Image 1 (tube, each protein chain N blue to C red):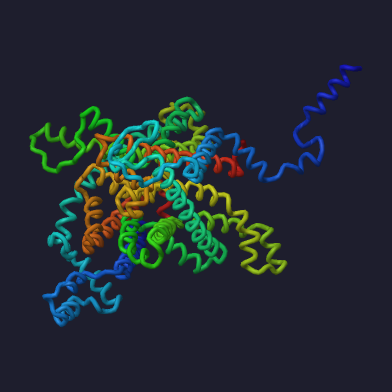
Image 2 (cartoon, rainbow over the protein chains, first blue to last red; image 1 turned 90 degrees about the vertical axis):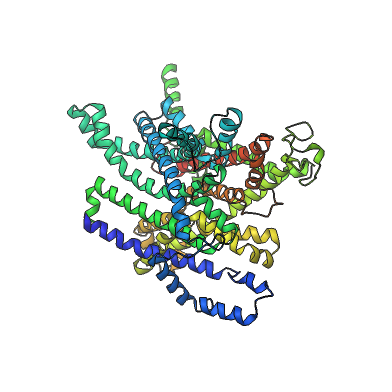
Length: 319
Length: 317
């Protein structure tokens, strides 16, 4: 098992390096230049500008600049934001917990909805429950998260006034009230994201379960006299989870994308909204760092999925 | 006697389909078979109807409905649906129905062209990988894995923001942005068709008709284009139809974040971007473009589902 994990880890490293190369080339090829504003400033003589460029190594060949950037990133020096002069690491670490909280809860909610609904749909295919569930899955999958978010704000904040629609990260309350307040303001972004994910996951769980339920070993289990719940939970579900786990891991990039949009609508102070703000103000170090963090998170979750996959299906670890 | 001949007649009439004559069997072409299977899927038919209605209205609507899209009239700003303005107006008094019809053309064109680009790139890469095999296959698959791991939205946002002005200078503003968005969306979505085509090629390569073609001396390009590719296309068609929906969603998301087309181009995402700050005073403004996006993507998804059922050779309909 550890050899299998080591192999997966070794494959992830070149992928991460490749992503960093792509990212760096895009930013290097882009027009515009961090010292572009200095060029317009009449107080700075051209020789000083030239020396500054040489000092920061802006005119060195691409490969040298890439190597220097990579070394700095690995050392933990992620640069300083152009806009706020804060170290980029500090900016990201301030906002990462919020994003992870919203994303994590949304995904847990999605799994809590999709697994039971998908299983029940598969156990009684084409029944009324199945038709309703499939229709809901289609509808949920076709509604863009920004539209659902706006609808939720319209209904729950404007008409009903139950939930606040601006996320505030400083809540003055104690104990249980603090938890309730956090849940109240997180409810809408988490539900919007969770429902969207649940819609696509339900279809996958249903088709995976349908494939497993018709297998011979399930018939054998039933013939042996096992109760229905034992057959489904112990035998069918475990085998059906294998493709589901793969899909869950592959959907994580999608949920990050959805999170960027949701953070914009609900003003959640996470890394998604930081990314948009940084792009709009051409804050290059922050943009590069955030994109890198996204890529690293995706790869981390793929590794996690491989680990769970290895636990569920030991045959994989021998291949 | 008569009963016996009647029974014989009914027996002939009730004979299994196609057994009454070879002529009847031969007229059952592949496309008609596919259409028959597609029509069994009621929701897919409904989806296709809705999609055609929406497409035709965006294409021909402006010819019939003569409101202009940028007639600013502050006297009627933020009004709900009325006889003059069937879907209401926005904060500048511009008619929403006209803007939605116009923006719909752009949104759907982006979806279609982006998916076409993704299919072209994906099929080329998948076919090369599947046909050549060996190290070519290995390298191309690692490239595919790399692209799959790339975070799509950040890259999309980044490339559009960085290269927006250059593209605007090279071509005219709308065309430049259109090309940029379409290339980037298509360029980040070719991986799935590539994998599907490669898988189909790997299994089709072993079949006997390929062996026969090789024995006849068919050059590789002709083999791929004429013999193998037509058989590999059915999963690609399904993926393409579903991909148009996701490309439309991607373009809407870009516009919603303010980083898509220029502000005067009323794509559906842009309309939502403008509407989101006026939700309390003018909910109709956000509801109409959002519902349009939802209807188009939903009908595309149903059509794709119907196509998948119709093209899946294993499923008995």
